[in-house]
Length: 508
Image (tube, rainbow, N blue to C red; front, side, top):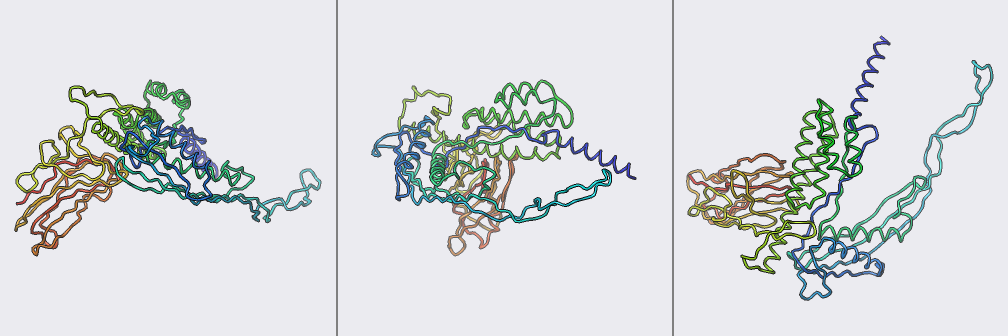
């Protein structure tokens, strides 16, 4: 029985070693330089920046630090030109800093530790003599702690450039450190903590108005067969690593590990390209497919589950970035109209946004007053879109509506005049989630038999990930109170990038 138990233990130990083999005890990590699109996109060519202190705690050096960082980011994007006068600027950025507070102090705390508390004499029967042995036990010991606590209130007001909006960009810092473990730079003095808070606020401002760093960490599988490619990847040579990993295929878990690493290479190559380019999206799509194949081959590997949601977030960023660049190009085309015969299309780049042809208006077919065979074609009656939406081309479908609702909700509506009699009045649409976890609802406005205006919200999906096209339908005649006349249909999306087609009301 003891031998059998030993064999079982050795087998389990071997399985544990195999489980660690793909990623190793000490993980091989690579940082990938992802960027995220602006939260409050500036539709502008010229920008006036005003940074000011609203309290005596915020000094001139703090104001200069924020202003310098934001100016560098705007110039570095090469999408805007900073101007010295507010008058005539397409957009104005006002950053207000106030209530800067920083406190750094030390404390001594008594902590219970298992330490040496004495010695005792013990007979060593083998050596036939007394020996001194250490005695251990729990005892309260002093421990030095550093407490760093601070905050900065700040707002950025964007005027023009896509609308006026105010955003809180301040922050706080509340951390404690054991002195023996070392201290981060910001916790060394109160002044260093203040500069840290001010720098963090500058980063928050930059993230609001232009593309900002959002790096991600990826793990590499470390199977022996993949080591040559891993060394190239760790050196940042992902194209060469991709070629190395693609030299041969394997079977089983090793092939799953190879597919995972190839996915990392494609994800890394995507982040080397502007997030609004087809090449960027193409590499991300390829990366996700490879990650899912690796997970399918080895569903028990927990580290294979992390990359697909990460790529979904990046695809959502890409959709938002593409819409932003289209809107920016449309704004500049309107500001500097060119004769049609002189229009030139240039490839987009992160520093020189290309002139993008304006999207066709969002349309829906109308046959009389009901909605029939709805499709977002340019020859059909228009919808009203609120938020980031555009007409996209879908293979086999033609023009569809794409709603980039990852950062903010998107709605599209059309007024109708559909009488409701004794028969059914089906409302139907097709939808496809591109990225994120989409929540889709339809808001129906109608008049009841007494003429009172009513609104009903119908849930299409309460949170759905990427997938194929799906149909949805519901009988509007079943609403309560019962409608006498449908007056408006509004389709709302949030939490992801979604495409819509074939919106229709078909009275029977």
